[in-house]
Image (tube, rainbow over all chains, first blue to last red; front, top):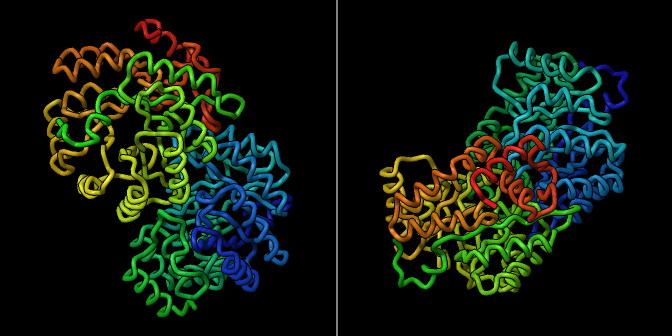
Length: 307
Length: 307
């Protein structure tokens, strides 16, 4: 676990919930978004990360992103808010830093979004530029499925030395508990005790927390905070088996993620089924699930009592 | 070869040159860009595709893209201009269609840019939406290295049936001449005689043209039109060996592309060495080549007489 004397350490621990940014008629559905944030506050999540991948950050204009950042803080009722600032171009990343600061965010999340493949020097310099220009602590967002950039542990170590880097969001992976613990320990040895490590990939949340991760950066937790919080609290209380069992109960949900190409489309369908967002809340060209697929999602949600 | 009775067929044949969009102090270097377009006109390229991957389209705002489209047409002196309209969100794609139309473009180029992975239905619907909303003919841009979307020949066939789809830009690949010809014939059988097939991946230009492609969509040709035109003219005159030999003479250039991660950074370094653009013309976070790498590029440019 991370050294609790670090000024950031408690901020970037526990459950950070990633809400959808629901779209309606090509604009942000602000009423639905406020409702999603209210649910997270009521559930007692440890932090809210607005404009993560689940929040469709890459599809929004700088003005829309500024608006979402402000809406989040306005409805967070004191729950810490982190804001995703990633963009293809450094110029737009810096613009997003400024709007997140102005909104009152307590942290930033940055992925090396790419069109042309980036190399390690490009990515290091991007993070150096951002952290040297803001006082806000930053989460390094390693999401190879969307950025197509592969971090090495050596790069983690270089980034962890930058003032302001407070946490690393690592991808989930199907490893044995022993291998997972060794994996987290290797990263910890490279990044030091002042940077927390957060797991993503919702199916791997319990395994990651049991393996020593300090935080769970969860996509589905932005829509279903209660069951993901139960897993997080069990793990942080040292009840590893209970955390694993709670996650195993959600296996039909994780299977849908695997079957339907990741968490985003399924999470959107869950939110739609629960009446939290209008139909088709994702930005085009992403069509979302078909009606038949949505039916399967609804069946799982009802069967698992995720309402 | 494509049926020349199609209204589009001559437009989307021969050499289409993809110029850089040079950046200077984070803004578009309009004087340098005008110079690049002038070079292409003087060389006699068959068309100019503005805002391709080489033109850094994904990194520019809608306003910047409108400006580049207009600058291109203004300086093209009647050479047909195609404009890349791809963006992460369909809403922005449509905005780019309108600005390309307003600028006087004669064609559009559309890649399925992704952050969240797209499926075939998403991509088909994107192309259907665009082609049903414009009279301009469209090039389907298959660039898996940047979009991370893999087209199937079946999807090519579905897209070719859309009114307005006029050409398909296929990625290059290292195949034997016999296999390459069979590959192009398979695509042609699926897409019909009214849609041209263009090769990309500069090292594969001669091989693609010799295998029956109608066009070469060339990145380096946007900066070095003369040697790429010589290859194109040889191939279209049926001088396959001469086209292959001319391409083989450029092998040290193709090797640099392979060594330095693709054509973009090398092409930028060539343009810089030739004094066509200011240093560091690429949008950050792309740093471009190191000084040592630029030295190798300059050496090859001089040795091959590419000035």
